[in-house]
Length: 193
Image (cartoon, rainbow, N blue to C red):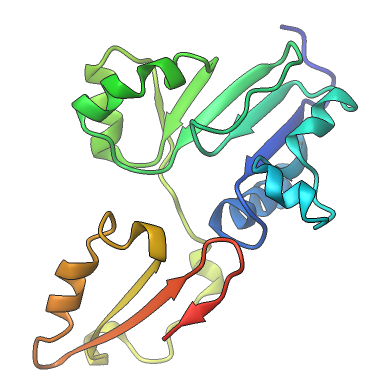
């Protein structure tokens, strides 16, 4: 495939102002040799009038690469390369049940080392792209050794059990351990403390 002089990438997050969206904005700011647009794959972002780029914009703007953040996101109808980053851990059995989804993509990456190993064992050529954070922007006020041990648990209501809520809640009852939870509605960003 022939790329334009400055390859055009459509980064598809799920909803505005959450981790996939912020990561896309970070790539946009730190990869000047690419033309990165950040859009949203879930139709309700478009139909609720949020004014954000929806995947249907592919029909209007040609992209060299569409980069998905979840395997169930809709596929573009244009003839373009489509990549997927897997942002969670899958067992070999789960990979087999999702094979029909993974096989739709031209390129795969994963940000979990154990999942990367499982994907390779399942026969996929997949890149390992660990998440990072800009350490130069964060300076803890209290050194680690002087801080109490606190657990911050963040999840949507839908994924509480999947994220190990019961285990973390039990750890939080240990003397000397602080526990703060943020249970969020995955679209409205409403929080319950």
